Length: 455
View (cartoon, rainbow, N blue to C red):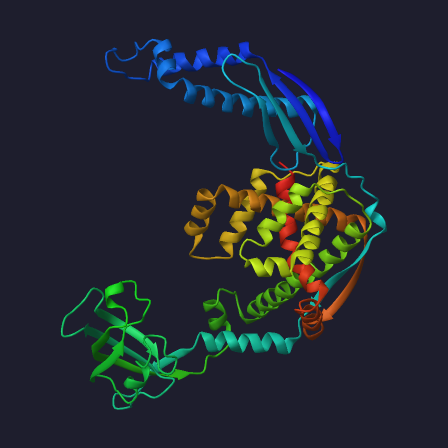
């Protein structure tokens, strides 16, 4: 194989690659020998078809298969030989090919630019801390208590009213016939919430323990059994019990029911949860401050094919007229994402930052803890979607880079109460705010680091 640089213009390099005909013929012979064991033709014993006969029958397709393999192998070797950092998929332009001829092709490559990082230590950003007021914690505690409402039995002759809980068995029929799922035992519904079937609750108002009640209802349009969707149904209900709500007493017993040690611990957990919710949003603002300074203080030539690819991803769900309307805006945003991805990746490489498999597993475990009861679903998702694990790896990688930058720059600490935090977050996320449009791209930058780096 002979490789030489044919032209170099900006970030685009064109290589000329020649593979001699002898090498191609050797590959052809190897493939024909492999096929001899596989091909079965009339008049020949299995595995005994002469290579010449196979070539005569399938020569063109075999040659195409061999050349395709040679192109993949030699193009990769050519790039390694010239030591190029490739951005995106190279383009191959065949100049000469055919049996008995040298294979001659050009490889058009868009290369990653040289990135000269400036000193980040002069950058400044604000790091927020949030102090949650006791009244906010109390309000949240009351909401939790209301969501976990307790009920006690009503007297046997007392009728059900809105807000009561009715416990019943049912047997349902459509046009006088039973169907799959037509029976239920010990069903509990809170009257007024209308969570069972539309209009079902109001027909149970006035029932009491021991009553039998016929309820007319229509099965939902999205019923899993299509043949049952929108079907009018009669439910024969046997009322097992009627309960009235009682005020939840927020004490140590209630706290333990919520997974805390006692009321004091429950308050601490609620405070931490609310604080973390605010900090997650405020950290995005801090990150944007840092990214803005990085982008503003660096000039980087960007490969056009990466810009085109990013625009394609960004606009894949837009209508043609929308793509045209926001063409300039989308190109600017795509360039920003590519530029920041290159800069962050360079900083990560310079500081030898890596993400281990253990760190990825730890992050998955963290997600599992935040989704109790869905552990198997989360694990299966990552097992079946390798790209999801790779994406997670990219996110961890970027977070490491940002944290390292934070440790080097001047961070001004600012303590906020919940009202101040909310105001800053709302302002940042205003639809017409430049910051808002930029903030939506922060998550995309995580993926950009992952795409550009093979860490």
